[in-house]
Length: 195
Image (tube, rainbow, N blue to C red; front, side):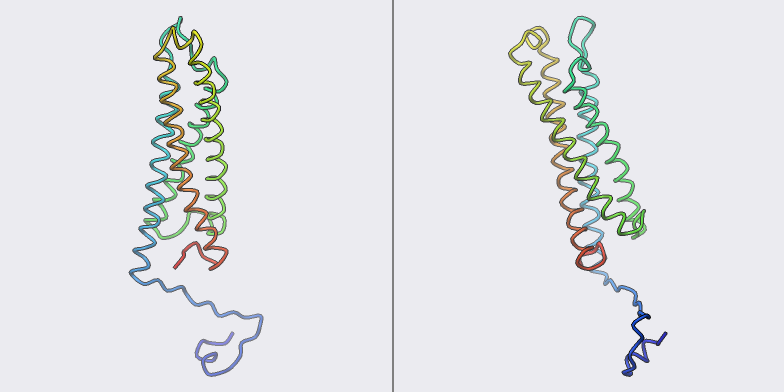
């Protein structure tokens, strides 16, 4: 393999040998990358908080033996399950973000991490959107029935749970946009960094 000095002197390297130079990042670039990673962490934290709150509101939505229970309705079970799954996923991704901020490296190999984040953000965002849409349709249907007339607090708490799920979807959507940006940077630059 030829040294960088030999290449600089005009000698051409063999096509089978590549000279790998370490990527240089200035202090300003490193600060921008840290801010970008911190923004992703904030969005993941918000998605975790809203999804967890939504699942807690749904699972505690029972007033006694004579009132309706959330698990009697398929759509509300779907809302609980989707929000619990997204809360667990967001907790894992928060750990991955903290790891990346503190070490400057990804948990998995870079190409795997970029596609893992983007793919899972997409899947779980659509899962949350479909669950909360089903919960909204059921909550709207229940408004005109005896269920909400007999136990108004059940319907109000169901509405709150669904609304919190939509907020979780919104922040997971923001995370998905940023992880999509990283995928594009990786495709263009060969690195998840845009700078």
